[in-house]
Length: 417
Image (cartoon, rainbow, N blue to C red; front, side, top):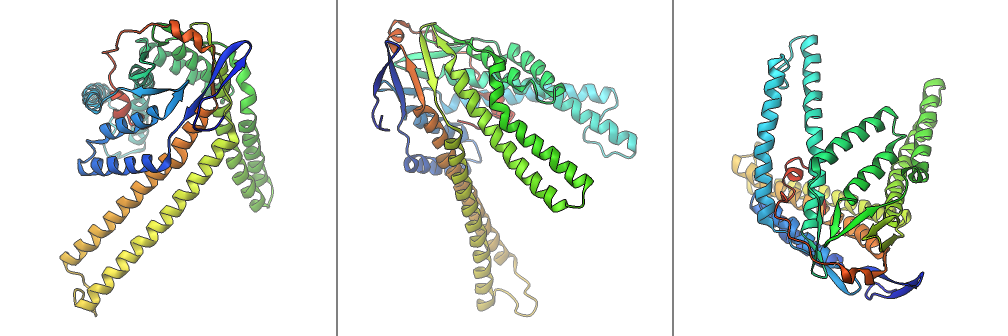
């Protein structure tokens, strides 16, 4: 299959189609720059419309059986959802801080004794734990919103109202993962994904997540090996004089651990996709590879490092040139090099403009070279079997209750595509 056309194949006597991603770097990068500048000019308000426009591009560049996806969300509903979430969170956190103050725990007071330091730490952790359920709540609601605003073949996706149930289960699974020192992480991954998948729909047809959580353990092999290398490196540092050898081991273990995290995510994505069903007749396959994802991340990271170095060089050049002009024109006193306020203002404005430009460039490079590339690889690895079963699926009623990711935006966990 080429990257520009959909081919069909016969698998187990049923018609199977490959998904295709048509997105390209240049149009997405230009779209990102335009929306980023508008976000900057509007002091961040336009970011809700910016994300909506980028999603519309990504969705419309994804096709299955020559039918592209459609994203119907709007920037206005995202803004209104954000404002509502901010009000709710402000009231909730205000009540939490009031309760802490009632027990003599102050988060922002200057500690004057060791006991007050301990009390302040306790207040911090209690505040974090109070927000943690809302983070899981926001994750579920954000996914529900994206599904509710996604169409394919004119049929809406959807999701049940079950965010608090997800938050309660996520807290329980997180506790089990922590007390098991990460050994039950596959259990958490599987059951939380199953909870959301089993409550998701395409039209009136329900998705179902099959499989077993224990079958995710092979994906953790490299994570475990990275941890083992880190442990052995720590032993070398603590028991021998070869600190340099232990340091190299720590670096190797850390890299191996991070690569292992990527591998686990890819492994889990492929496995969970393979055991998903729609209406018990439509099945899916995904053959994403860790090597492909790592290549996108590495190339994107190298491009960002290059852009950062170029930006630092440009800032130093701007500063040097403006200083030279100031000396040549008498804007600076040659003996004391005292700069007048106007000249300092020019330097500050130029430096800020260059800095903002570099930040925008880095964001655009990551979006184009990493995010879009990984999405494209995942989509192109995707296969749907028995698509004829989709023809019997009927439309579902529109979801008017989605809060447009307001809580995810307010908690700063809604920045993804």
